[in-house]
Length: 284
Image (spheres, rainbow, N blue to C red):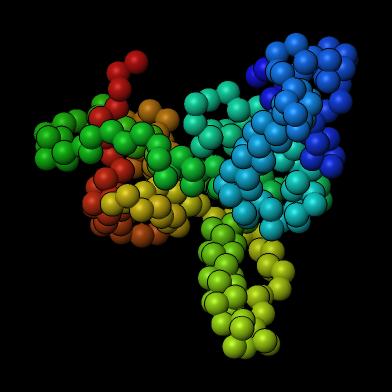
């Protein structure tokens, strides 16, 4: 029955007439579902097959509003169906539906051309929001316990829910614009009866190419994204990849910019500690 339920729907959202082995789905359904006085075995099974797909497609749509805006509804619909057919849900939680989307888009760029790079950035950013919303949180590191540690050997861990993204487009601004447009649309719908001229805004203006560095995280159970200086991004990325504290901080100095780096780095770490980004690094 599970194999039948997971079969992708037809283009008109009905159950496939053939089973996975090429036989008749009606005959297959009759082997484990009885008909009743209103529905055949096939029709009873189709109800569950359709509801399964409507559910996972609905969740996927909710997780990727930015990618949907970039590709358009029709192309996104085709992409969603193909991706979920190739990479069906394999987890107890629907939050993992998009965990393999970036890999899929990298392997098959035809789904996002001619906006491949922008679409990839958006897919990565929106998956980072899923991770940031309910990813694992480890006990926040007590910085006072590090007093006297050797920075040449000290290695810090970063919270699992924190994602560091180096993007070619400012998709964080794009997502904010989408949220504002949605709020305006809700307000317009609320007054539609008294104001027939109220309209939702038109198509979203796509962002221009611009290199940005973003941290996606949560704080006090709320999701945030924070722009980072390129040097700050390199420091955090080095810590994430296992570099010692001294080596990671040297990444900032290697940029060649003339700044009061001790003061700047001190401010960065104070802010990151307040946000609770550091945890103890697990020993391999």
